[in-house]
Amino acid sequence: AIQMTQSPSSLSASVGDRVTITCRASQGIRNDLGWYQQKPGKAPKLLIFAASNLKRGVPSRFSGSGSGTDFTLTISSLQPEDFATYYCLQDYNYPYTFGQGTKLEIK
Amino acid sequence: EVQLVESGGRLVQPGRSLRLSCAASGFTFGDYAIHWVRQAPGKGLEWVSGISWNSGSIGYADSVKGRFTISRDNAKNSLYLQMNSLRAEDTAFYYCAKGPKYSSGYYYLDYWGQGTLVTVSS
Image (cartoon, rainbow over all chains, first blue to last red; front, side, top):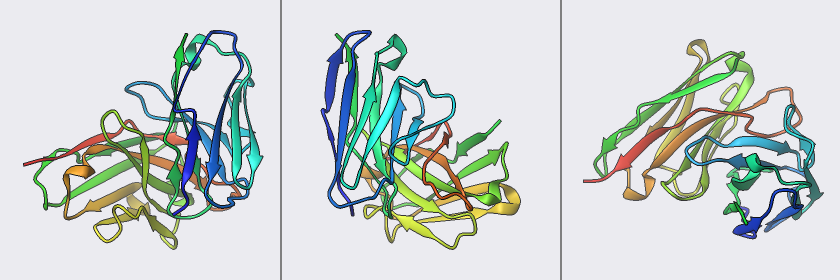
């Protein structure tokens, strides 16, 4: 199975900050990667698919990039509602695999 | 409005079986891939299994292969997960999640249910 290494595992930041979360795949996955946001007690929500495509309705401050093995989620200007846990998911082949998650906390 | 409602989660003893269901509405169920994802309390997400629109492509996580079986009934707009030989480490919230349409060139899980809790304990 493809391993997804996500970093950092936690991140402390302030409203208005620019933050970056990375995921590295153990082998090339083209651009078959999505980013998900999860808030406590809630189901995850899709933010970005195919590495850089923003899901309709997701604010444009979220962006994704990368291809092959290295991927990045960037939030350009943190808003209070963005404090959550973020996961990457490789959907290149079965079994799909998630990164370990990044908990984004308020500084 | 897309809705996915999981059911069937409960307390079950190790080694026993359980069947989860996911009832879908608000979209043409038979046109879309569907997945199961689980999350142990306080832990990260783990993809469990996925099934294509026509059941022609099915995948499982290594941790459940040979014990869990995914299936769907497009006439009933329903997804199932048959879980056998349950272990304590299968304890988790189980979510069903909608994948892309069969004609899509993309892959993703764009709508999720609220989950059902499976607890494996004696």
